[in-house]
Length: 223
Image 1: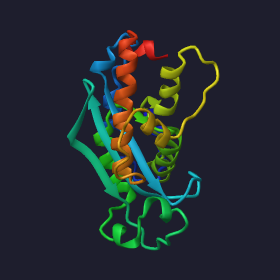
Image 2: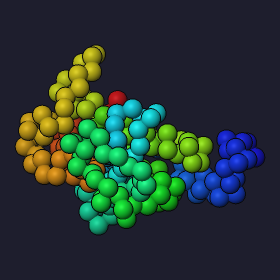
Image 3: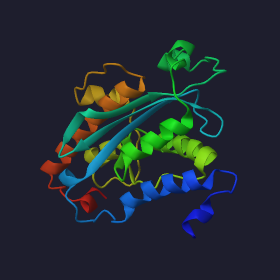
Image 4: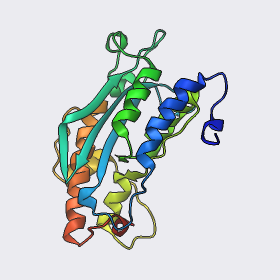
């Protein structure tokens, strides 16, 4: 019963509890610190939003790619546009290019978040400056279900610094575009959720490859 005390009575407790139960089942077994990185499932996530304030702005689109065994599973990918009846494009449209026509056939936040959690499972979330993506997803999850993500996260900005200088005490964040140029990764469909997720996935694999050559083989070795 303690698990379900997280939910308010007004939030359709039966449906929310079932969603939470289904999601929690993937975390019954914790990731071992000795787990081989190659055997872990990573999920690269990217979102496009109306702005950069996770408390006030809204999700427009989300994309995710599954990586396991140092391979991107293109056939197992997730992408969705959120429906917004009163969406008013602002300055952010110059970056992501999402207009009303893209959201006309979008789905509700509740539906997308439910499907996203089913896709995500216990995968380790990866992204460039992933803190923002997780924060705005959590904000939406809290609004609809009063829950938050339990997945571990890994930021490619931090990982790139880990590759550059393993003993660095200060974290120097490098923009994704600059890292793509450094690692010879074509930018492709930049500033779309699916495009950025794919680019970030390629960067992630390149970084893991560099680390593997240094005998960084287990989950605990990354840290």
